[in-house]
Length: 240
Image 1 (cartoon, rainbow, N blue to C red):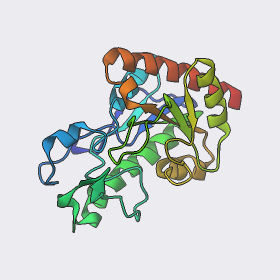
Image 2 (cartoon, rainbow, N blue to C red):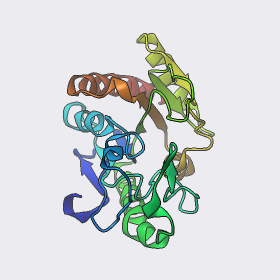
Image 3 (tube, helix red, strand yellow):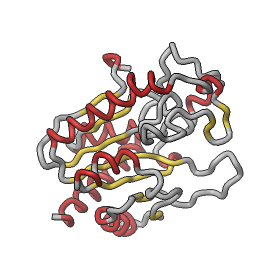
Image 4 (cartoon, rainbow, N blue to C red):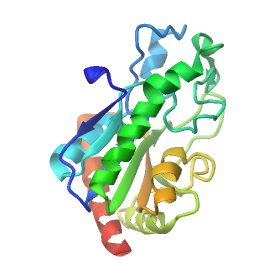
């Protein structure tokens, strides 16, 4: 982790602009947290959202959309869950047992990683007063448990506020993409960060998930960064 913080921020915040938040951008596990898992699992979707850090970094550096990124794996602490959620420190993920998390000191991890991450995010957003928050995630094409292939290339999730999502669904569709609405799972159940920092504050947001196999290379990440910047810029204008 850079500077020992559970987050990093890229780019210059301009009041009233677009910003990006990525809760699952990192697969980093601190040395003092032995998860007891095979090392190769840290390169899979159970540990982080593959491709998201690359897309968010390019959005910040090339398209002027600053980013707040996690610097710790969701296997250590899931920053995109409520504090009292049973999986805020997961003991299983997509059929994999995480033995080091059984009996873990959840309060200690909340204090060291979760609360500093969200406190810094709240302050950052207060300073930015953003026109639109982009909550950026990625999803695996298929879960390990034998579920069907997920055909969507991009999906828009939301809880009660679907205004920005409706515009984004239309705009991504016009680009010829296969778009899912509240897929591959419902944002009404999994929207913790945007519930807290957007819906509760009356802020506009787009919760975007990209299929991971579409952002595995730098070229693909650059392509998606440009598309998201364009679509979300137009969404922000539509919401004025």
